[in-house]
Image (tube, rainbow, N blue to C red; front, side, top):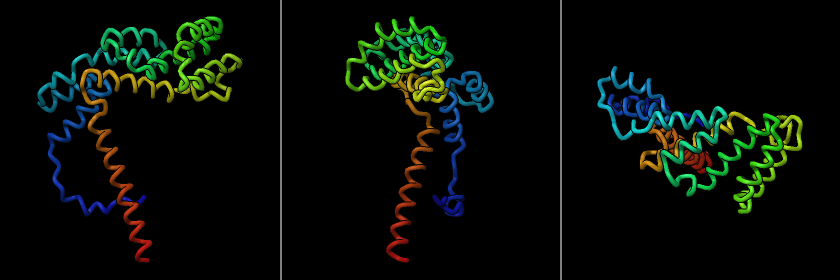
Length: 208
């Protein structure tokens, strides 16, 4: 996809405060609290209380989910955002699946099977979870799960995506933006570029 000629927009002025707010939004969203505090001090910006509320707790939850203590992440989530996981069964299932995967990778197969029967199977009765549950259970059949057809379930990207979804859900539960301003700008810019590319392609076809 061809980018627009920078000459078409280089004259557009950008407000410094807008840029700072975008950077701060990104730092807060991703729980970079120390960096956010330093950024606030260096720029002289006012501290946005609502954005910084419970950031330390969100950070702990995110890293517990990311680093292999999912049950602790679930426990803290239930304290910080009551009923969130009860209402969002998709996210709850995904978090429970991470703990199951951790047990399988630690070769605690008996414990993994018991956990699946008590925690995952009740949710697995819903049709939309059947295939996920079958894929998870199939991991037990392999001595080296990372070499199984379901190896993607063990990838850092899979785990990071679930941890990120949890972070977004907690923000939404607190009535805060679940995407940073920077992410929204990139999403909007991508849509605009795709639209312009389509329009230019139509013109090229009509006027060869």
